[in-house]
Image (cartoon, chains in turn brown, purple):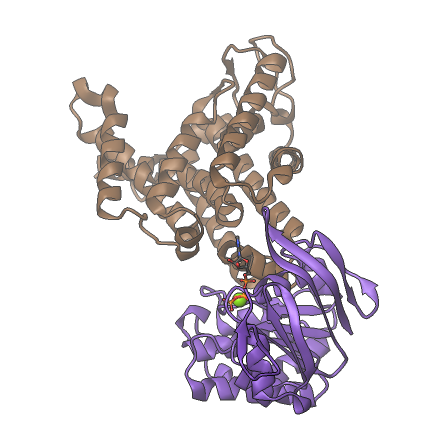
Length: 304
Length: 245
Ligand SMILES: Nc1ncnc2c1ncn2[C@@H]1O[C@H](COP(=O)(O)OP(=O)(O)OP(=O)(O)O)[C@@H](O)[C@H]1O
Ligand SMILES: [Mg+2]
């Protein structure tokens, strides 16, 4: 029982990180048809922003030492600002370009950000010990779980509910949904393209910031490509879930999380190194059955 | 109210509209008729800001709006209903209507326009919570017109509202368009059928090959005049029609 619940918590918390990352990608894809690989680098930068900028491999905590709430607000503000800056400088001039052109542009932004990080912080891994209290275990109904996993899962649930409410109830949320179905029609009705796109980048940046904080606590080490594995898994999650669907991104994220933990548990020790091959084999199977992903998005098929 | 002066619009190097002019005065229902590919939709898209003319001017209430962005033009008072009923299929009927009012700050007036729109289109009132994509074609056409009115526009542009609808629904849609005109709205309606244009419009422009080939008050035009302009026939003195290409 302990073992099963532990695996379930592993799967849910890994799935949570994938789902949050996938949402950041899916929102932008829904509205701009942009597959933003630079999203992973926003996650990386959120983690680096915790420490004093220096190429010394021994990291000195900076924002990471502030009171918890201050740290959270500062990291979110930094990553959101950076996300909006990327939009203004890199993606805005290419608005309306072909999706593959946009994707290549996002690779360029990603390389730029990674190399900027190497320039400022050096390329060696740095130990970052954020919020060590989260590493302890707590007993939930007789089962011992790591506090970080519980925090990760609860945070994700709260953010998912928050995002759903925002998209359903607020005027901007409604405009974002309209724009992701038919951007030009929304504009014919006076919906401001700049506002909707900036809002999508801001939310995407906010999710990246939350993921960096949760992931940095889990990993304890940061490198210039810290966010890349997350963005890869999340990209796969959005494809499985159905490109551009918010619900699909969440389902896809959890599915990839569960597949990871499942193969980790069932594969014999000798094959565990090849776990990703099994995970992505499973992904291919899902896509063979449902080529458009779990949730079909009509406007994507018409437009892309 | 709206003046379009000798605009030229191309797709790449292929011209679609070549020096087209027309105007609509306040409170008029003007119809633009013409065969497939005449450039009617291109003209509407250009007025609405989705395309930029290479030459010519577009003025709304005397103000130059040429080359402005679609959302700016919408905010200046032109509401465009494109060809093919673009409802937001995932949004409810109610949300579709509200999108049209999101740019407005006059909350009380929005409320009364909302009620007025539902009074014009009672069928929508029964479907408020339904996703727009679940409506029938006729209901969708009513929804997009109602939605366009929610912006409280100075001019409404409607591109082929009759496309793919049963004749009885087309009559219903035109009844509403005429009623809107009677209550003071200014409308430009694109139509393929000369017959429906004559029945409903105050004035008519016939467009062919990206140019206006005939214009006039519908009361003064005959079906014959329209057809000749529409198909490019020209009445010769000997009564034999010649085809112009
Ligand atoms: N997106 C486009 N790219 C290239 N050419 C186009 C495009 N849209 C329209 N055209 C061309 O421009 C010309 C005018 O088309 P337009 O759609 O304005 O005609 P229309 O009068 O609205 O016709 P219909 O009655 O069929 O709707 C046509 O020759 C058409 O082939
Ligand atoms: Mg047309």
